Length: 376
Ligand code: SAH
Image 1 (spheres, rainbow, N blue to C red):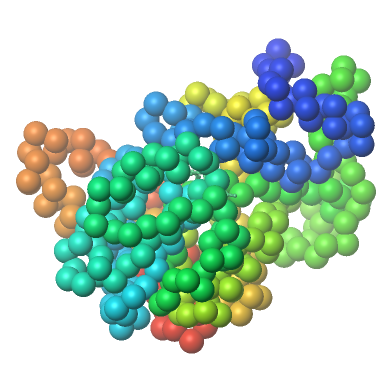
Image 2 (image 1 turned 180 degrees about the horizontal axis):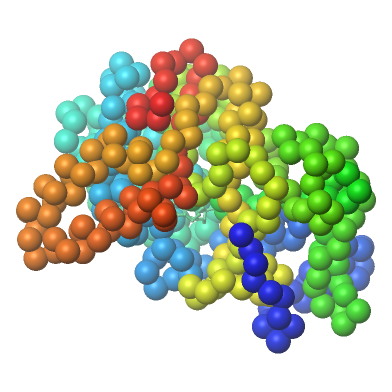
């Protein structure tokens, strides 16, 4: 939950803050969704568009950056899924938001153990960050896998008929980065939450007009000022993208992210800069803004697009089914000098009070396919 207080002294006059203030002076308050979208993907000042933010030295660390075992197990999931699809001689692997390319490098190493798989695969890396795309290219350029890079899912779709075969899609911590719209309960109705200028001319929250939009959570049952969040991109970008792939050929997709299984009120939009939480309005464009995934809403939207969903299941259960315990002990025996850090990495991913349960895995597939491995 985002409980970080909005300390006026902590506000930073970033270049994007100046632009957003001018926009609000010119045209009035903007929705939280538009604010978040500018902060993350503004071509000039957006967080993802301008920096390489991932890794131990950056603002936050992700599962593949904690241990190589995470990516290796994702590679095993891809291999089993490929076999379940009948081991096609040509197929596509799409990674959405590959960051530094760590997960896919580890996954490909594991996949290479299955004869025929790497030769059959064409890899697509979709990332809005040109810096991270350059890192991904460096990492993969000397490998055996043919790959293409795309800034957005729409760019891949525009060219997708060039690539025959089924589609396996993987994504870790992609959905939480797609921005969020917020609503405030007021007298039994949801109102859009907006970003305005307060009396000091600083960015602040305001309650906008009521919305007719129906949600799985009823505003009439909420106290005034309760917040409800909804990610527009599930409906506007992820569902059309996966739906289009599924129209071309069979689709099997895996999303891992942190979030809640049931739709619930609560403010989860959070800002992280230099490993510390801050208020989402404090440093526009210079902090990572993420929000928990509402997996119930995500699954409902995918089903609305004619796809089937498997799970969600907790990260601990999912990685357990993929053999994380066996893989960890084998790696520890082979590298006795690194055994302690290998074990620590696995424990972190599996922590019952931490990543093991806060993160969940959900599958999305063509409706005619059997349930995807390890998710049910
Ligand atoms: N999967 C990586 C990185 C997660 S961070 C890991 O686990 O380490 C989110 C990633 O998604 C970043 O690489 C970011 O550049 C990318 N991203 C964010 N929004 C995007 C969008 N709208 N389209 C494509 N990529 C996006």
